[in-house]
Length: 271
DNA sequence: CAACGGACCTGCCTGC
DNA sequence: TGCAGGCAGGTCCGTT
Image (cartoon, rainbow, N blue to C red; front, side):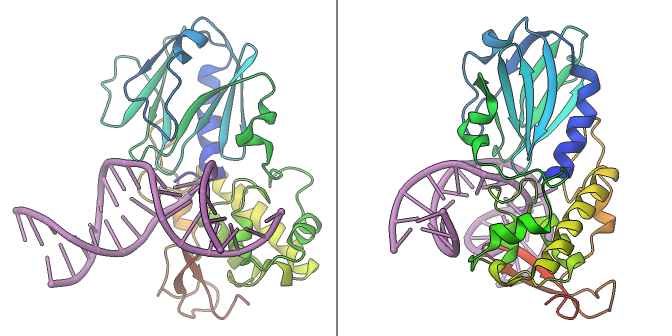
């Protein structure tokens, strides 16, 4: 489910409720996530203040004392701000309780998300160490993409979804950015000109920024911290639109799995 | 190192 | 109505 815009929407939604607040407890109803929630996490965090919430790629990082909480939403996860009294639903895995009476509740049917604690410097952790640059920060541009793509035969779409190349671009926004840039998703990454990579970097930033502004994309179950869906779905240009007319040239959009993932493109606009 | 396939899960939709 | 099969926003891991 969540790509960078959905994670950013979640972060911005929960941050004002939680930063500076003391953790009074952790209730784990079902700790079976991608990796089990550490048994001692409640004891480890109780009484500590959540000093900072930030994002790295699709991870949310919470700084508590010398340690960092690592949240990931996987394919179907969502974090919501609720009251401790609100009855838990099926697949509500854990609650963080805070001194101000707020409860941070995690919901994840498919259990691909995680909740871990990192001791010391978080960016040396194996899950974070090899991550590529943030697409919305300086340093991410056409020149960078072009250099990383040198000699690679991989389809550009798979290249963009590689978090070692750039973080936060998942299946929806890879499809959308390639459409905006006019690049065929199956084109070998190493066979794209520097000029076209400039356009692609711009398209990636554009599509991610727009989606954040609209509160993310909700296909079936993404909800923000208040339980509301995102509205970027209405703006999707190709994702999920196989067989429908291109919004630019009205040619019928193609759809075909590419590297196990649903891929959509306009055969007229993308080469 | 690069590329690829399998694996991890549940829910929902389609078609028989 | 029931059931099998396919598919879904992520990403780690093992193999070639």
